[in-house]
Image (cartoon, rainbow, N blue to C red; front, top):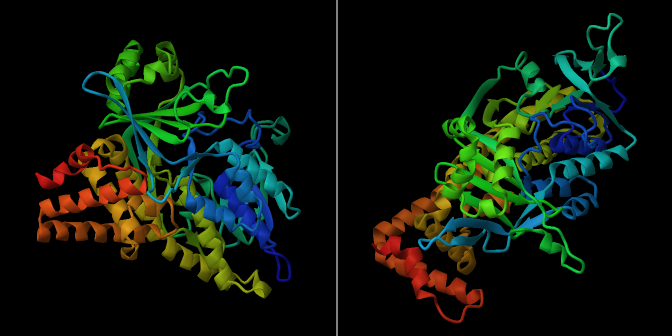
Length: 506
């Protein structure tokens, strides 16, 4: 352990985006930072992801952007956003009663908020490259955390994937011992840091697998002809997250900067098993439930991707507390792994970093960076503050799966969304916003988002009960009309109004 008068030594376990940002925050505070990663250098294209897949594309939203904005690196957010594609909404794919393929755009936010599709590897490279320029940062790849003594602030790592790392018998990898002042565990859902933390903290832990597996597919970029606009590489709109809702399952596509789309099939395990038994039925399955996909991905490619790509589970993890004494804290998926349906997993992890260091800063004076007592109070405050928010977004992510695979085509869902957006535009003093907008385009605490949304829902029920559904239908039509006029429409689309608000008037 570092002695008084020396800089604090902060060890980060996990070099993914969350761990890399945590290291950046620590380095900016003049800590001596060491980053330990189980895998080889994540910037090396030959490094195999832990799930043996490219993984679900990431959607960067305001919380993650804000965390990078506060990293102390002025150019970082510009570099990151320069490699992203703005997605202003969802594109819902279906088929009309006449058999024609349909597309319906649903903007995320009436105020113009957008998510940013980002390549995980590219984001990781940007963050690690930034860290590599800092003289007080050291990397240790191929290091597996095998033990920790959080009372005496020591840890042991096994060095792997190298013949030179074998001990003299040649039978096991060499192990090294390190000392530290603070360990930050950012090593994912199957966290070794959390495993060792459990031996010291009275940590409540809940792990749940949902009955859905995911499999990756790809829509390839179109070949550009001489003089064509680069945007022509995209087979479908690059500024949307594309959804083929199947009520019990769904297929999505997220754009990549090279013109391709990373696609993901989310399907209950029983359906996966049926398709595994007879892969030849996959094209007809897509024809039935995901109309139009076969025009983007050839039938033989659908079969090949399903057979060759892994069918991976989705895990949801809750635990508390996130720390022990002054010596260790876990963040990101290590603390609160969630299903991907709100696009908040990485964003919540990046926000963890911002919240953690804000609390550490408020408890630690510059002259006492090694004050273990102050650090212990800060970590305790972080656990107490962050746990309600982590549990809230965990639940919201589960709920949003229903929204994405089913509710997006429900008139009731669309009616409430348009009504709430209208209220937020024309009566801003009410502070009315959709839940999605609060989560994705603001920095309001997740637990407060849930409370605000519940309050809005209760108010809508009161209005329904007191003035009658007919009046609310008229209000809804009025709001839609105002929004239409705001968007440049000269005539109210009465057919559209009846379609959207028919549920309110019976």
